[in-house]
Image (cartoon, rainbow, N blue to C red; front, top):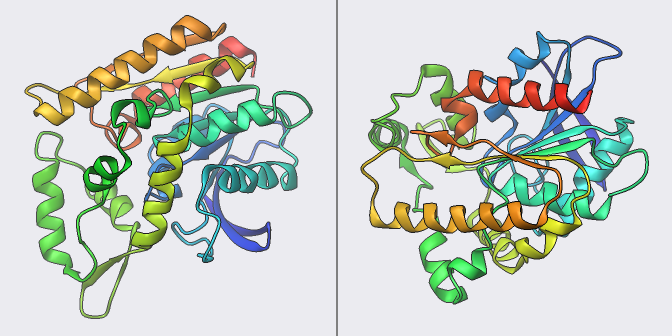
Length: 293
C-alpha cells in the first residue's frame, strides 16, 4: 500500500494505492460520510492480489486531505473525484462507493456517462439506494436524527469502550478499530476530535437530503452492482424503518435500471468493508469479471 497526495481543484487530496501491475484494471474507492480511505484497507489488498490496481481517496474534509471551509456538497465532491480520475488518467474505472460515497458515484455516473473517464461500472455498497427526503420528509426531523453524537473531546478509552459496545455483535479486529480511529485526531491528552468538523458534516447531510436519488437511477448507463446490508436480528425500530426504506429504494432501482445486479449481505452491519472484506472483495471481483474488466 502506498500513500500519496495530489493537488485537486486547489486542495491536497490524500489517497492510498494498492497493486503494482502496470496494466491492471483500475478500481477507485470512495468512502462514506465522516469515514476515510483506510476503510478499504481490508478489502483492497485482496483485489490487488488478483491483479487489480486500486485507489482510495480521502474526500475533502476527511482523513488526511485538506479541509477547506467550503465545498461540502455532492456536486463539489463529485468534481473532486472526477478531477482525481482525470489527473491519474484512469480510463473507464470501476467505481466502488460506500454509504455517502455511493451517492457520489450515482452523480458521477450521471454526469460522466460518456467519454474516456466514464465508469466501466459502479458498485454501491450499502448506500445510494434510499432517498433521504422520502424517508424523512421534514428537514428538521432529519437534522435532529442525523446529527452525530458529541464526540469531540471524549477520552480515548471511553470512546474505545463505546465502540466495542456498539459493535458487540461483531467484535471488530484491532485493525478495524485502528481504521475507525483514523476518523479522529487524538490529542496529547488522549482525547478524540473528529477530522470532519460538525458544521461540514451537517452540510453533507443536507446535500444528501436534497439529492433526488430516485431520479438518478435511470441516468446510470453503465452496469451497476448494489450490495445492501441486512442487519442481524433483533433490530431496533429505527433500524427496521431504515431497512424498509432501503428495500423500497432497491426495488425502485430494479424497476428502472437496465443493467443492475443486487447482492444482499445478511447479518451484516453498515460498514461492510470492515466486517465482510472477503465477501465484498469476491463480489467486486465477480462483477468486474462479468464486465470484462
